[in-house]
Amino acid sequence: MTKSGKTRISAQSEHAVHHVWSYIGFIAETIIFILSGLIMGERAIMPELKLGWIDVVKLLFGTYPLLHIIRLAVFLMFWPILKRLGYGLTLN
Image 1 (cartoon, rainbow, N blue to C red):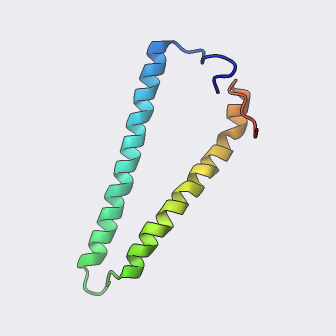
Image 2: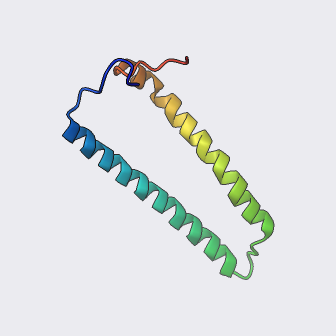
């Protein structure tokens, strides 16, 4: 990305943007973990819904690949925009 030079924003703006995106990422991760904990906690205490090992395996091995698929989908969705905005993304 830095092949053609630095981005066209000032250092102060770049620093502020970095902090904003870091905070948004922190909030997103927090929401995911809170929701996962609430759902699994509710299932663990409800007598009619038993929490078994298969549920834990599904959570551990299902969530990780799903998050990577979502990340790939978002990247592909914004690929044309990033390609035109001066980043010059290519497959090479």
